[in-house]
Amino acid sequence: MSNLTIRPIIGMETHVQLATRTKMFCGCPVEFGAEPNSRVCPVCLGLPGALPVINRRAVDLAIRMGLALNCRIATFSKWDRKSYYYPDLPKNYQISQYDLPIAAEGHFELPPRDAGEPRRVRIRRAHLEEDAGKNLHEGLDHTRVDLNRAGTPLLEIVTEPDLASADEAFAFASELQRLAVWLGVSEGVMQKGQMRFEPNVNVAITFGGVEYRTPIAEIKNLNSFRAIRNAIAYEIDRQVGEWRRDHDYTLEKCGKLNLGWDDDRGVTEFQRSKEEAHDYRYFPDPDLVPVTISAEQIDAIRSEIGELPLARQERLRMQLALTDVDAATLTADRATSDLLAAAIAVGGDPKTLCKQFISFWSAQANARSTTIAGLGVSAPRLAELANLTRDGTISATAAATVAQKMLDVPAAPREIAAAAGLLQVRDEAATREWVEQAVAANPQAVRDAKENPRKRQAAAGFLRGQVMKISGGKANPKLVGELIERRLAEP
Ligand code: ZN
Ligand code: MN
Image (cartoon, helix red, strand yellow):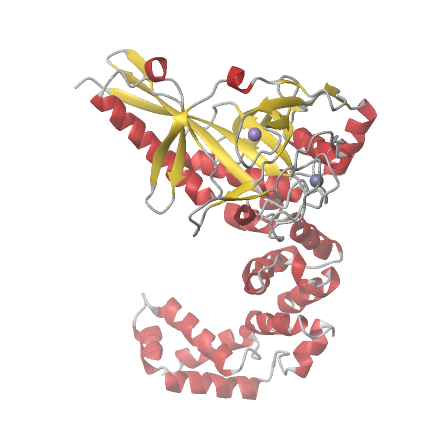
């Protein structure tokens, strides 16, 4: 068999729900989970004669995201009607932007993988539009329509087909979500459908000196990162398999198609062959004035953006010699990352702060389903706890206990540690007693440390840990180390 190469070609369309209080063209509140059809008015119900009015806040957020994606912002853009008929779309058209999107021709960099170059994904366009309502059929023998979501502001971001694998698409989607949330452009909660992804997937297959391209499949409405990765990986395999059976399975001969993703069964399913733009009969909306944006307005929004998450991640990684994963954790959300910077600025030891953020502070945040910033501990208190630990005034174990108490008591960390008896004891007699207890309780570790050079280090480390545990975290680790060495040197 002559050799065959496979190159996936993936583009991504993302619908981002903008973090506005009200809808795109009316004053109805944007609210998830409200009583069905309780957040509606003549405009978003599409009643005859009702006139839409542009939400300026949505325009500002779209510009902010566009700038962060290195797009050119249009100083003049307009609104178009995209016509289609569906029960969740009461006007029978969606207000969108067709030929003059608010942002275009940008790019977004993904973190390098395996110490390579950052990967650049070109952004074709980003345009504003309104969301449709929701058809509800679950557990019913009929369909109900909830129009609360109708008219919610969306930014649709479309990339060029620059993604080369399911993993890369996964990375793109999660980075885009981090960026949107970081910028306050969207709340970005996937479970609430605030970001929805539609990858376009096909495969270039080279075989016998000829390149074949499989039909482009658009996988509709994915709302988890895992689904993005699984659906794309499945689709690549499926297309290659179809082509192996029939070399006429090509874009040229079969056109484009829309697919759904069945998450339970782990398969894509055919929905319909894909519409072309002319099927939507786009035309300018006569009820809306065009959007004009001044250079001053763009500059003002640009000045609010500040350092982007990936840039900050890289800076922290370099300055504090962190791993990629730790640097990413510390820049997962802007408020937490700003809090870390503030704690360092008031004199907190950077290394210890990072360690404590990544370990017990994130554990506390996770346990409360919030972020570290959401715990509400001030920068000076975080800094003090870090410095008490660095100075050896309290042990690392005790720091975790103090942190827990800091969430309930407003006192200074040192006072909390003192009240809980966690200040470290440099008392030789007490420490020697704890060492003796650890030695007596762990004869095997003592034998290993004395007789087996290969196990010596690990066994001594184990004994140190046991002493710290017996002391309730109060022992001074340095003194413990010295006393254990002395004890092991005894015959
Ligand atoms: Zn309304
Ligand atoms: Mn759209």
